[in-house]
Image (cartoon, rainbow, N blue to C red; front, side):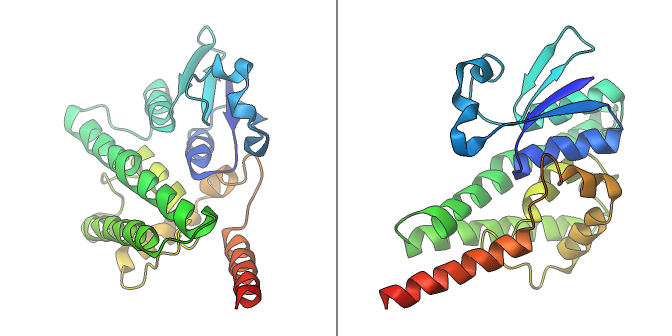
Amino acid sequence: MIELYTASTPNGHKVSIALEELGLPYTVRAIALDKNEQKEPWYLELNPNGRIPTIVDKDDDDFVVFESGAILIYLAEKTGKLMPTDRKGRSRVIQWLMFQMGGIGPMMGQANVFYRYAPEKIPYAIGRYQREVRRLFEVLDTRLAKVEYLAGDYSIADIANWAWVRTYKWSGVSIDGLPHLERWIDAIAERPAAQRGIAVPEYRDIEQMVREADEAAKKVQGILV
């Protein structure tokens, strides 16, 4: 049994999707990020970085794994699924996983901060991160023009990237003109395990979130004008 400590964020969804795809039994402990529960001493004992997600493998001496990418690799190796075992195949998956960990996630995260959350709207910062996200999307589109999934077969690399890319509207970035990326987004969205995974620990409708945030921004702008 896997204990999953998580919240409804792209990084959290990476792991819940993988667990659903792999068919591993797991329990969920929702972490209240709005209450800084991830910074409480008991949680820092599990994850010293005070972030989500974290897993505890109850079937293997309560082995703890933190960092979403590391968790995905651990689960893939534990089950022998969603990542090839041959050297080159494994490397392809890890390359595209690292692309998400080092690029897609951080850049979309910064775009979100400056576009959605920063009390002061700084056009340079917003534009800088949105342009970089779009560039990374173009890299994915180019790759997906050649293959169905990022590393050839469906893998943890697709799960990691999709969990973030599917939220592109929240970052204020368009996928217009990227047909291969759009095809890939839609294909994974149809997978039952992906649908179940993004509902852990609770489902959040990105489209509705964007509409509500945009409407609130318009009201504020109207007041200020």
